[in-house]
Length: 236
Image 1: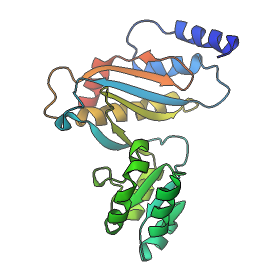
Image 2 (image 1 turned 60 degrees about the vertical axis):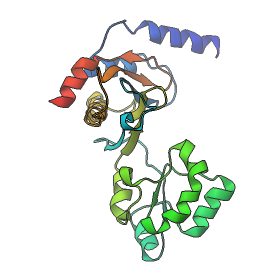
Image 3 (image 1 turned 120 degrees about the horizontal axis):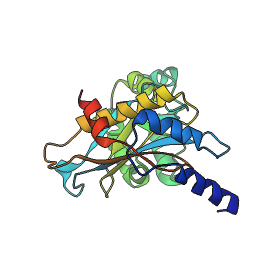
Image 4 (image 1 turned 60 degrees about the horizontal axis):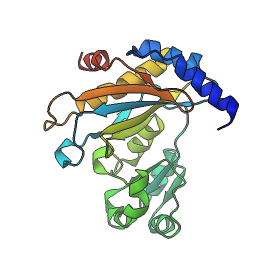
């Protein structure tokens, strides 16, 4: 890191007080301390009171951000027959059958942001776990990416549908938009994610569920949020 960048980071961090912020305060603060010359992504990180080693305490789901992510996602669809034309008409950038599965498998090719597959192709797509799994791209019926309704699935992803899941350390990281978004749009996107994570609480999770929430940007500092207030708003 250059000396100038280091100074900018230190200055931005110094602007964050050691107290919980409301979402409506945190977003303008990140915008105010911005120093990067590109439009940074804003991320939400939630620390959950679950043990991800137990399958019944895994937290995962999908949510459609009301204001999208500020970029169009590249969608790939593995299907057959007439559904290939349907997928192209719905706006998928990459459409194919067995040959697309082979390309992904042989070349570890993942030049897309989301992969949708129809159930009839899952026997072939199942071979792609090693390539797609670590990148979070494996189609899954629970997240709506294994479906016969490819048009609806493509439209949802294009509209800003994202997946969230706990990692090994019980953290959930979710992008909620670009720093150039108006404050109210970033606030609404972030609150929508928090609400979805609160609703996805596993029945096996005991004790305090939301242990902490931070809002940050690509180069900016992490701003601690008032998790109690955000959780209360999610349940309202």
